[in-house]
Length: 105
Image (cartoon, rainbow, N blue to C red):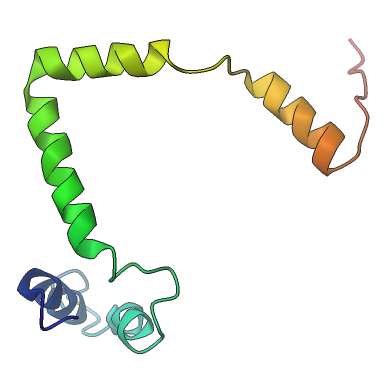
């Protein structure tokens, strides 16, 4: 897989270098090793190319201000009602099986 995607291979080599940690060469090697030799359990490497391709589409859309604004407005308009208080209450009731406790004022 790495040989099939030169950009991904170069990125992993870059992480192994001392570019980000000049005082600690190889400090990020364990991150790369966990991906390459650790089986990539979260499919980070497997999804790399589709992620890069999706980001290119996002960038193109973002640079078209009218399109981006229209997409943002439609996204908000299509959202269901959201309330953090309701979400927290749902978690408390359904997941944690707790009851509200009034806060003294």
